[in-house]
Length: 406
View 1: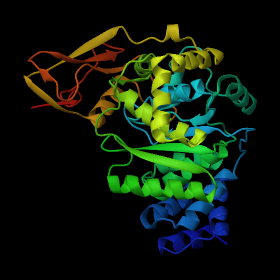
View 2: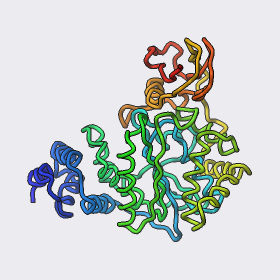
View 3: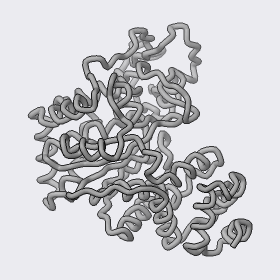
View 4: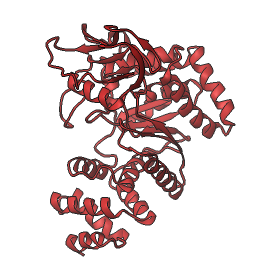
């Protein structure tokens, strides 16, 4: 067996056996397969796809590349494919915890315009995000919440392949996305998983057809591993919340946990309700009543505060920049669109995101949207606050074109 034959076979759109996939992917992890050879195979997969059997086999190869977690009780997990202003995790996990539903989650950092849950939590001074397996289990038992950045020992093959995909234009392969997501979820030990597939200009998945295809792959892989998976497809043409930027998003999540009704509230309740319904085996409407009540009576916020404190975090020290630029209108009219893509690009330029995995980010900067679609505005009216680290930052007209006014 040799890698050239395997690359050529997939180039010709032929089926790869478990042994061939294992030889290639595990060979890359052990550094017997070169970057350029794996890049060629990933491109062939991106162009020609993988069958269900191939995808299932690849997911198993990913899982078996490292350690796996298991628990003495069934646990939940949720995942988002990434978007702008997506702070749903920070709301959903406390809702579940307040209802005595355990949730265990491995989260990632943001790259490019999409924010990562790990970055948001690291904007809380003192919060410990890198947990050992023992610390992860301890947090689950104490808080009903365990959240950690992905360890080096959990699905290391996925980490290696993900990094290569990111720089070889192979990130949009649906089977590779599905294998990457599900290998981490299954290795993390979840029994019930909800995956929020973001679709639109500010997301990796751009079309409903691709979102529905990914949804099928995810649920089918779950069935193959006897894990219950449900998905929902949510729009990412516009930001999910009024805050874009790490500390700003944490502060908005806290407002939602204290009962404020926002766009972020509704999607958080939707995700939480699916998991409650699955875990407790109750109708979705009953689950929504429970999720909503946990926000209104502050029990979700109390669970959040307990978890953050137990991880060393100090919510009173979450800070945003005191340097604020006012984004003002140049004409009167009605706001017809807020561009998620433009907001993500602007937040990145302000310093809230990273273009490479190792880059530093500024947790204190970002955008606070002050107007919503449908609002009427006057000339020279402030429509957004830009939190910056430098008041002399060079922002072009194109950078600031986040609102459409008609």
